[in-house]
Length: 469
Ligand code: ACO
Image (tube, rainbow, N blue to C red; front, side, top):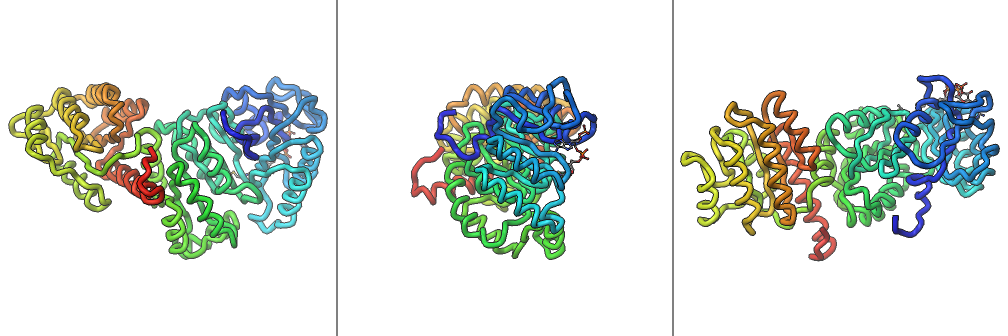
């Protein structure tokens, strides 16, 4: 990677990892982390540390990190809380650069002293700390899965930072199932040292990341201004989508007992996100819908959007969603109307939504897509499909990917929504694998384009008209 060294480089790109608390027993956290590192294709060196073991998963085990005959960039700590600071000190003496502290039982349960001591030890030796109370970190460009989550992560351009461990682990599997490609998955837990801001800054300069998605429960007291100022710089470079939990009074109380963070007044968070150019999603589904669009499509160059559909109803629903979310639908001029008319049955409608009718076949969609790509007046394209017996969704998905590839140079965002049965899900998988974002409802496609437009508008505003895509 051609950039200046950053203090978090050893966290995302360690050349060697010690797992302190590596276990001989399948099912234990310290065993799973070693297994995931081996199975994920991590090319660096892995050193299990366990005073009672000779070898773990075929690797020689060391009684202490101090016994490892090599430099160690990162130490993943998975020993019980009472042992953490002792092994952290040993890691410091060894010259480890970053600690990934999986262990729970720190400030989230009131054990502030142990957490403060951990940070003190880290500072003393110039180490950085991720955690404690986390499931680990994965960075797919180097095949590193130092987590106790699922071993398989789909590679891609979405970085996900999460303050919730269990949700984060659950979403690792969920993203793979939903064909969402990840560059990084980072669990931040108590954020005793490294926090969401610093991670976002690293990811903003990471060539493998196009969008940063964050599950946030709250910031530490007194860090709001810093968050806003520094995240503003991050969003100049990359879109950031946050889902902020604890919006309600009861939710905020739940946050306090989960990670010990201040959920604070929700309106303050909303204002801070807005001022920093952060997109706030209301649900996990929405966050990943938007992330999918940012990860795969170019940023919009303009706002004029065309909807191509074979169903009037979904066209109307998409139009309503466009109105609600502020997505301007292009009023096609006579020339464009005539061009669309040529590629549809006589009873279709060439206005926007361009309704190819229920009789539409692959050729009609391909024709309409070509017209939309070739027109300078069209900036963004949404394709809708309702499953019919006359058009197989899989045939359509393949045709859409071919046309999108042919017109890749046009740099126009293309989003697809397919409504129907099991075959449409297969078709959407094909599209998503080919980096064309596909959604199971028109509203979700429109909402995702709207997020892209909001972000583009924000960036243009803050960079005073400089083209940024
Ligand atoms: N150095 C290295 N290894 C040691 C040392 C030492 N000084 N002392 C003991 N070990 C070994 C143990 O022998 C054991 O290996 P073995 O199974 O081969 O005997 C291994 O380290 C682990 O020690 P255990 O005492 O078995 O600890 P256990 O695995 O039960 O628990 C853990 C450790 C997982 C860190 C636990 O204390 C913990 O914090 N669990 C919660 C983790 C968590 O929830 N994280 C938060 C977010 S994720 C989420 O919410 C889903």
